[in-house]
Image 1 (cartoon, rainbow, N blue to C red):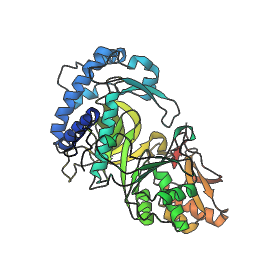
Image 2: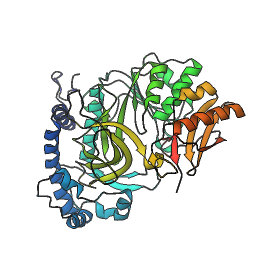
Image 3: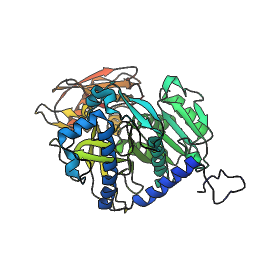
Image 4: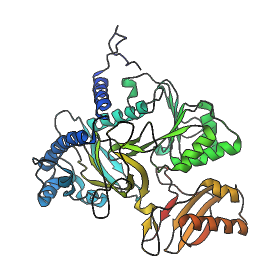
Length: 456
């Protein structure tokens, strides 16, 4: 890859624009820092955390009071134990704090502030500020993801996801001459195309076949349905090289669907609106590397202690570069499993799986809470091929509703067979009820959850 030059008469080596030079400098540092040891990474993180804590204490009324109550001295050596003394920041804390959470000034070089809103799955928005600099970091980690997975920038990128105000609707969607996200500040790319997730599966399929992309980005629930639609219709995407997943939990069912239908692998991204890139799938494995230059990420158990490899806990993040609305030990609501150090040589911490949110957990009558195993879609197809989409809602400690979209009515015998499969997968003899729908509603941003616990 050769850098685009913005200086007349100089083609090689390329001289980027000032903004491109900043991005290039960050990428060069990220190339080195990924191979630091875990101890070396924390040393650098602690330096950045000290700068963040000092600014938060001096410029935010909320954090000044919070640090004082917790006895936190930002000048003292920062260790994991010191960090754990800082109270967890919840979504409700952010909503109640309002502008008190924001800082009253920015350090030199952070650029302008701008406001974002994140509604999450609850629908209650969190309003916060980001800066020009946080966006530069976002662009850098986006490029790191492409570079890690060897994406050919000359290829075509197709994106099927939420677009506000019904933009990007079929048949044409939206298009641009490059991949966006400021990649063209450094590299020439092929075109990119966007289609609104609200499009029907047939519209998506026809649009994809017209463009025949090299890379496809979408949500895992959409990809499962889309792969099944391609298979049933006998459609093909001969140019597809890889699928990139965002915003939803990815499991083996999604990966297997993409392999069976298109013969390609998935590269998953774990990110959030509030802090950008949190973890990127390892180029050599299916687990994830925490983006430690962007966030300090903790996975903690119910006692607030750090989880060990193989343990599942709640995800807390501290954004290292947002000095407008500091996010310090912010609880996302996600659960993740901690992994062992990776054999690829990167010292970045490993997350084995991202498991979803509290409302995606099954509650047993014993009081035990766990993420449910919903089985393989092939299990259901052995009973009937009429199921186009399904969702499970736990209505009580004894009842689970299976909402379905079907192409033809199911017989009582088929329902009985499905009931036995569901009980086997859930590991408890719940009362399974079936309801049939023309469409199963998604969130306002087009995301879909296969399991929701509706017990209040």
